[in-house]
Length: 523
Image 1 (cartoon, helix red, strand yellow):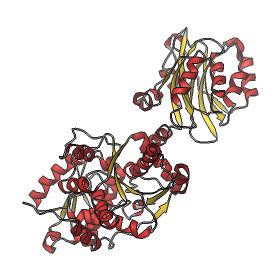
Image 2: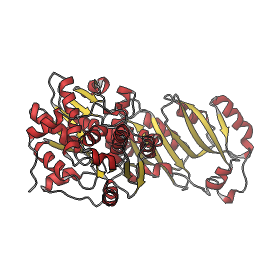
Image 3: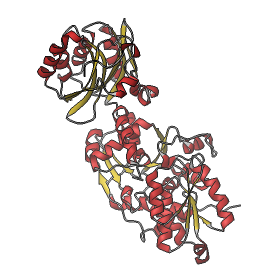
Image 4: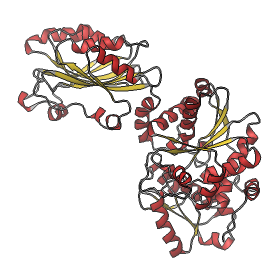
């Protein structure tokens, strides 16, 4: 029977781990803005500042530093979603040995390129870490390489445990809990092993994505559970099966497990940026998302929490999605489908109602509408909120004032797709002119537009999305009879907002203008 290492064994391995040939002692920084908002002290362990922008090089190097020379000479292999791969590649480069890295095909390109830049031989296989692991195991045997496991290895676990050693050395005061992201469990196993040996009163709280919670399910079932599928937003923690040793340690040492969702993680990425001006990857923000959830659930005040920012290998093109979902994740934005009568003045009445909603002024973050029915219109509306849980009350207020409303704030289909798909050709949009406006981003800008517009003209299309700038880009369809051309030009001049007419744009002709209306209106 395999002899398990005891807590004192891991303590010794952590204290003697060889990580500082490649790793730095990362800062432990206060998150001042977040701490002020939560009324608790939040400390950020900046593992995103390691040479490979992740903690993973600690465990990888420590493992390789303990290999016999003949094994090192033949080379090493690993399976990784990216961060462990960079750690192995960097360690192999420092030690002058070959490194084969098997990565899932879903791995962000930034991580693939980083591994190649460090001299790693990249092999793409499968959709998750588990798929890549199976392939790497076969290659390992065939080519007589040494497998460097990303989490289920005592030397790897000990290397990651040096983070906890640094946290307790860097912060001498009270510490109530350390929040740690869990993928396969190597990081939390090392952190918990050290903290429970040295400061057992400090809680160790594991955090997983709600769609990649293999460890939480395994602990609940008292056996390792293999997930049929895992969410890939947090690719660094997308593990279907946790390790044997990490499961044993985590089950024994971790105090609590928390699950967070995509929107909460996006909001946490923004929180980290506000305090540090750095952008962490989704896995790197799990701990911060959990702290916010923990405080909200327990109503704590005056406590001290540490969050390990475990990685920052983020593809730049994912930032659009993160920014879009961060406001909803923090519930600083609420989304609604509002039905209004298709009659002149209804749009303006809705905007006026938004301006008088209980709780004070709110900005419109999004407004999507396309004329499609002669009797009623369905408008997709986004509004800023002041506190969590406001959206049901706002929806009820719309309904009370005669505008039937559906709260879409927590509707995944609406957030992911429908908000981008409101529109299409409409046979009702006769005499339509399409214009791109630049609205000043201030209260009353839209109301001024509606008030200045001729009362006989009808808005047939409206699309606006707040982009965080001091102006808003807005697309408007207006039904303006040809006889009103002079009045229309006077309206545009009087309004004073920069605009471009797009009525003759071929994209409009193909996707938004009904064939029944023939060619473009006045250009």
